[in-house]
Length: 301
Ligand code: MN
Image (cartoon, rainbow, N blue to C red):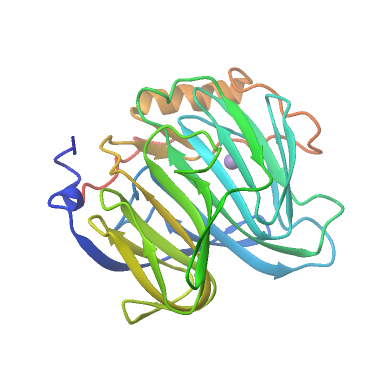
């Protein structure tokens, strides 16, 4: 079943929409936010995509995210270069390196920190994404998984590391694809035609159906595609999934359905309830911004 308010899902059709990412800052780090954008809130269950780096640094911690809470989503941390140390309120501690996956399922609530470890390569390049949890999973128990290596599918002139989706050991809750794709020449990449897809170039240059792909632009591809015809020498992140079909509300680090759920989570965080303590992080937890007025529901497309 496809919800009638997801107009792009009916009828299924292939698009090529260029959505420039928005520049913002996260502490010392320059971020390009590709999701959500006003013109596109979600791609399948994917509801958030930040791209950062590549940067070179000599000292300090370019990534320094103090303990903060999440509900109703999974966080996906993926590096092309460098290191990030994850700690959470379940007691998990995991050093993420290039090519690995840190996957945190927030369910009804978890807190975590992510920062550049003291011993590092002086390079940082990566992606932070969120996946909305469907109704039947969003109130579940929190969990954390670290996958240092992931399955690779090879094709003529390319390969795809499958972070999430068919073949990946990562836990998922709705039909999804998240993959790091390398192209070297002309590549015909098979897709699930029932999925929405989008891609973001992370390195190099490529064309899709003859059109040049620019960095820091999310290319939304619609549904109904059996394959992608790519050419060039590049690396890109491919995200996809079945159209989500549930209206979500996003505020700060929360994905919910109602204003009341968001207000309750913010209050619990301020009071030190529900989310638990992140041990080992040197510093204070992140306060929530003021919750003023009502959280706007996403624009119906
Ligand atoms: Mn987070």
